[in-house]
Amino acid sequence: MNYTNSLTQQISFNNQKYFVKRDDLLHKDFSGNKARKFYYFLKNDFAKIKKVISFGSAQSNAMYSLSVLCKTKGWEFDYYVDHIASFLKENPVGNYKFAKEFGMNIIEGEVPKSFKEDELFISEGGAIFEASFGIEILANEIKEWAEKNQIKNLKVFLPSGTGTTALYLQKFLPFEVITCACVGDEEYLKKQFLALEKNNFPTILKKEKKYHFGKLYKEFYEIHNELIKQTNIEFDLLYDSLGWLCFEKYVENFDKKDEYEFLYIHQGGLLGNISMKERYKHKFDK
Image (cartoon, rainbow, N blue to C red):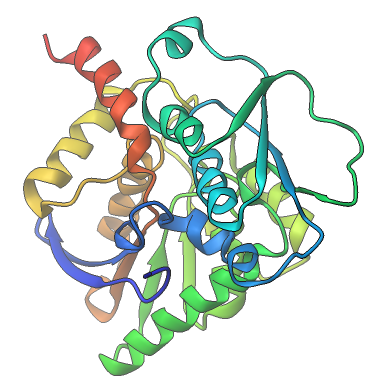
């Protein structure tokens, strides 16, 4: 099963050359940045563990990936949420639907304050030190690809939720890692970095306007559709649309762009698009 060594593909978007690291094409059920973050738990033995406990939103990518991990390892999986919309309960879709099919036990309520010896607690979104294990492998793949293709000047970009992937990529890469905050603002992202590491942070791009996570924006839908049209690659509507808006603007204004190559990390999360596209079509395709 392919959990590492994803394809790196060259594309042209709006007449600018980019490379895309296709982590979305890793194993069909365990792909994207969550496959990297949770790789440590997949590859190591945890003889005492019988259950994983985590929390977050009812359409979280991490929730789905953890359900796959637990099914693979033979563990129970309890996932806590503040609220599940009644419409989603009655019409299961996306990450919620597939995580339940993989055996997730979803609970509306507060996360327990303490855990038993046979329970493993994983923070929301995989913002944990153990994530560095799989992300270092990703960094090594990028270094090997750059060396093989004689690329010395490289800028690596990926959008951030908790920022864990960007943070550890910067730790293990000799190239500048650039990101933007998709959940919260730049200060929130810095606090997330500081919870795991004390220095050597990625570069955070400032957004041109304030975006509320999960809210629908016409420019997100437009760039999503344009990316599919020009590159034949589908990206995530929640993170990648904002990511591409920020990254494209950065490259456009970068005065040494002719001296550099630009690599975008595709982190998967496409199951979430099933429900997001329905919302976007309902609002904008009229």
